[in-house]
Image (cartoon, helix red, strand yellow):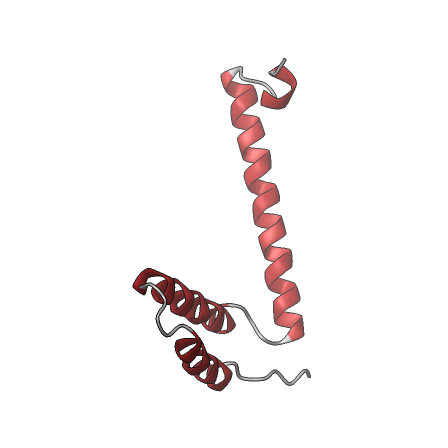
Length: 89
């Protein structure tokens, strides 16, 4: 079982350091940097942390994308559009 580090304390410290480094920067640059740091921290909550769960998530995602691609190709063939890449000149 892999032990993962909690990124929330590191994000709080980095936000403080980022705020100190961005003194005098335009307000929009500060908002963008803070937003990006919060998004990166939130990714820890979205993705599974255990190795076997993470592998299962990626396998399910690949299977889902493969099914979508097959359905899209079948719909194009049904509608008579064929493969769009081969129709380009």
